[in-house]
Amino acid sequence: MTKTALVTGGTRGIGRAISLALKEAGYTVAANYAGNDEAARAFTDETGIATFKWSVADADACADGIRQVESEVGPVDFLINNAGITRDGFMHKMSVDHWQAVIETNLSSLFYMTKPVLDGMRERGFGRVVNISSINGQAGQLGQTNYSAAKAGVHGFTKALAQEVARKGITVNTIAPGYINTDMVAAVPEKVLESIIAKIPVGRLGEAEEIAQAVLFLCGPNSGFITGSCLSLNGGQHMF
Ligand code: NDP
Image (cartoon, rainbow, N blue to C red; front, side, top):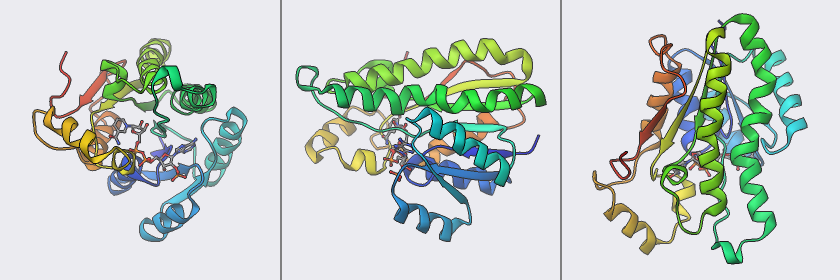
């Protein structure tokens, strides 16, 4: 096991916190991002973590990017599928472009990113895949048919793949965050955000570092019996 971890969308928000937590725990981290070079440069300057730019919504770019990471950093034994976007709007007004962008980035990306690392994990007899879903993929959210559908798909993907690779020492799990204090949530109008926080039993947004600690746990040496599971980190907003 190399302890090389690849975090998609690993330069900002939740992904950034995951990259940092893994690095602090002794992993060698590669952080992928889509297009914000300025944030990526500042991230590398601050953390020393190498960044790699490609879109997880592009299958060929994922295959090429992973080849580059594996030759420059090491074989990927820990894959954190974190990158995600929203393109909100009520269904009757939603464009096909917004539907497809969200499905490709949040769901198809899991196939594009995980397939290229699976053979290596199978050969080495070890792997950890953690997929970041959302409370809105569990409960549904108006204005987010695209996002809710994509994130719900993450759970199905996780449970199916977990069964396929369990005997090879590979675990596949989902983390479903509630509302977390990142740029994605900063884009939510203030009044809407107030009404969301009012529905969170712990009375606050979550912090990216809290999600990162759960990723660390699922990647850790004592989590080999956990697979096909979902950890819901949502301040009690959705219990089932
Ligand atoms: P941010 O918008 O803060 O950061 C998104 C990160 O993903 C950036 O690094 C961005 O790169 C990258 N990214 C976006 N699109 C792509 C792409 N096509 N290819 C590669 N990288 C991409 O998001 P959050 O940290 O808030 O969210 C992270 C994950 O957590 C997402 O999957 C999101 O759906 C999920 N989530 C978030 C919640 C929240 O409340 N924030 C709640 C529940 C789930 P760049 O900097 O180049 O744009």
